[in-house]
Image (cartoon, rainbow, N blue to C red; front, side, top):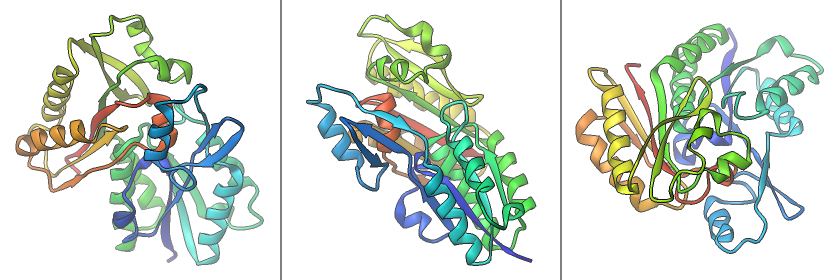
Length: 284
């Protein structure tokens, strides 16, 4: 029986020290800025992005994982004797799924040993799915078993977030049903959810502080009565807000795992500085 390795994209935010324990390869999304191409969290870090955004006259754009990098990841793992399962962010948010398929088609051999799952989410909701599957793979699960576990994982995760402005999501075409929140008074903060593979509106509250409180309430409601629970932050240059949320949610859900994660540059370019939220996995 072949062993299984995982490939995911950089929007999964899995901290390096955690993913180093497992057969996980992360392929970078792409940030394009003033004619230069950067690889997500490889040649541009989150802090570099947000520092530069504060004074930038032109905004960055993003692109999906390159077919070349995806192909290289598959090829390397196949040569090492692995079957490969790719678990990627929602194809409704990115063209990464297409890159994954094209890269498999370009393989000279081993196409039948490479398969994919659309996580229908992003951030550490995606990351937690990848980690659970990676643990199963290390315990000897087959490619088919790993794929089934990843598909099951989609029903046990979620993401809630708030942004300083919807303009970044709007410009990138990733706003989903939250389009109707555009033009909201500046003192009203939108609460958004990644659901059905899209960024959708939940409600609006009057201040960012109330938005943080409400996200904690929503996550606690979704995790109520479920065990085990895993919680992760997501933040774009809002470390203090993320720590506050993690501290507030912890006694409410008693997580077996907590991850303090930063939004990757490619996602931060699409949500904007000040974005903060929580991702969770419950009952799996």
